[in-house]
Length: 53
Image 1 (cartoon, helix red, strand yellow):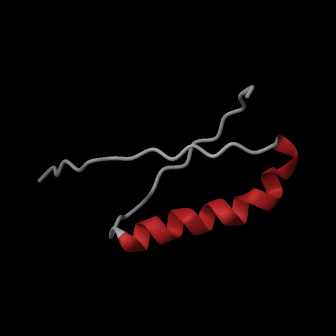
Image 2: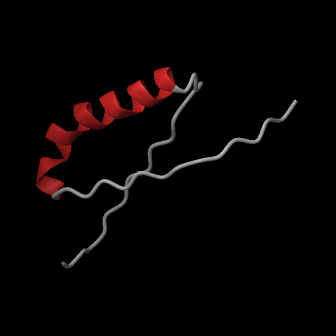
């Protein structure tokens, strides 16, 4: 049976130089979401981008 659920997107911006430091923090967020919402998996996509504020 296919179940349809509402989905959400979280965008995290950080300097490329901090990628190694941020990795464990991002994984903690993903794991917490999996547990809180009884998910089998939570996607993670990484891409470089340019942002100006």
